[in-house]
Length: 488
Ligand SMILES: [Zn+2]
Image 1: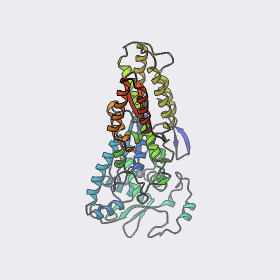
Image 2: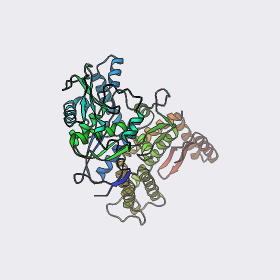
Image 3: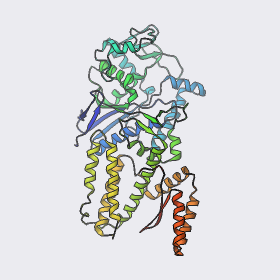
């Protein structure tokens, strides 16, 4: 098994992955609170952990991946009331919408996708264990709190000391808590459709305990990797650790992986700023693979800043990949069954380079650069006279490129169909009608047939003004799209 190193938030160091069970990665990532449709921030975390999972699988690991749905929450209750529907109706609709969104961006379902509302007995059992061990207490109102001061290493994930936390939260109303930092495991509540009976009366679980309980249900008390966005480190993940270690009497997740945060034009996404991009809005403009490519050009731990330029560049780059793939497929179609590779062209070197980047904390930025080089190299085979060795080598390259891009969830479509779709969408972005482009290309072809080179060249310039580049290839005249701000 290939050695994989990953940055562990718990230690702040890059560590070699050693799974508890040989060849089996058990990982949990916090899912969405289902009160609204998913936006590009949700998509980002989902795509990164999808690729991390795929890379483990590509290396030969079995992966058990759990991603929960938080379907019990104040926001859900409030939104359902606003819309005059039950919390259950709202969450069912939002989970269906989220599944649709994830499919659109090629994120596979997790192996287990538990909902809080279906995990209440396990949550109550865990809270009872905490109460029995003195790590939690109930107050007169029927709320149950975690006793933060009882756990001497509380704060180890986010590197905070309890004394600092106490200062930081001085103005919080303590209510019926022993200590400001104590957090709710169970809240007294009687909302219809969003509350359950418990030893402490009617109520619902706090946010943090749900993940502790659901992770244990499917992965056991101790498992390999826990992931999430960096904004969850404190308090959510810190509290998960405190609860699980105290209740189970053993370690919780061994590696903590946190993805960065997303900004749009250097601003946090927010509805009031009008830069709140939903997955469905993005998909109306570009295929899902464009979004995946845009994320993977950043490292998962980086903060990602999106702009129109990033989207356009990703679209243009993906178009280049698919166009190259289509050309190489044509060459590969004539490959003999047995032949030698063209000297100096060996896709196995590409596989090694890909692993070199990816096994180092999932270096998608470097891996993407290697894949781009791989295409450039393979495209050299298209130059000059076609030989059996070139066709054979092209075939080896397209197989390898498809396999490696497959880890990223890219190049999964049939090239011709994808290219046509993407070109149409890009033209729409440029406010250009396809019929106009076709008319000009037709005019240029006619001029060439009439050997009117001056006119053919004038039309070519006209197309270039529209950022359309015409190329005369061995396979015939083709056009592709340039974008002025494109840096590909
Ligand atoms: Zn969680």
